Amino acid sequence: MAFRNGGYRGWLLSLAASACLVSWATAQDYRSPAPGSQMPLSGYQDPGRPLGQPAQRPPIMLAQAPHQEAEQTMPGASQPVALGGGLQPNEHPLMPAIRWARDGLHNIQQIEDYSAVLVKREQVNGKLGDEQYLFLKVRHRPMSVYMYFLKPEGLQGQELIWIEDQNDGKMWAHGTGLKSVFGTVSLNPTGGLAMEGQRYPVTEVGILNLVERLLERAQEDTQFGECEVKFFPGAKINNRTCTCIRVMHPVPRRNFLCHMAIIFVDDELNVPIRYESYDWPGRPGESPPLIEQYTYLNLKLNNGFTDADFDIRNPQYG
Image (cartoon, rainbow, N blue to C red; front, side, top):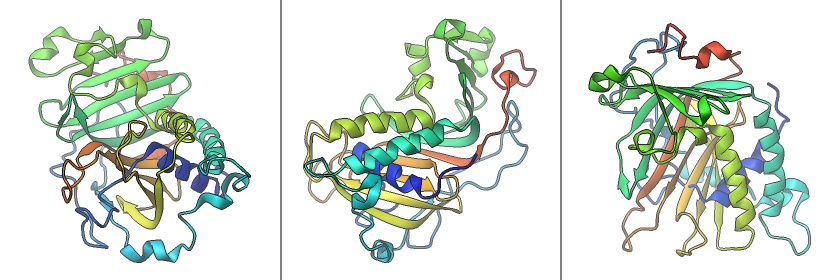
């Protein structure tokens, strides 16, 4: 799928600046690895071949922090004045980025499907959970999701399928261990069983949903100021070169969702492949607590998925 050259910089700025997404991976004042280093995700093991998954996957690596001087190599990059036709008289500084973001959203909507290894860690009911690894397949038309949990051990082997406007809006799922005796069951995606240990329902999974939520938040943020934005080119996730943007709201306000955040956009694919957000520190000098973190690794676009990839009758399911 071809993307219009240069369009992603505007919308990725809007995503970051409007949704307040920031990361320790590029915030040099916090717990960053040394420039040029890479950190392996802990204990990843290939479980086999769940429902169409490739037999082998390359090693998974965490984001590589860009050099501190990277910001200085992009004069004016932290100012979106040239985006979306530039800043018009008497309009909010986010509006040029929002215009570019809408254009970028159109490009993402043209993607038919994708697969990835999703690594996520999130606060649920005020408690930060462990990392979860899952193999993910998404199709946009109709919106379809397949998940196979890889880690932690207690979730490994669980599968679920959800297709928009099918099965009365419910998802199909089967567990492992004692839960496997129930076979495949239909669950309300927002019900207690489906949401156990999860911050968002399966209906909100995926890159397109992420971008749409951030655009909605961007429009709301045009009512407020107090937003600091910086670019860091040359960041890497799993050896893929990305542009990342760090955003900070210095003062806690009810209208802001978080204190700091970052979004990484793959320079070749022109889609966001990582974002995370942090709350304000409880005390001066403390590190900001993580709210949520999502990384799309080994992302492959337009695989030609069919109904069989999201069918519980597929012999590879279960």
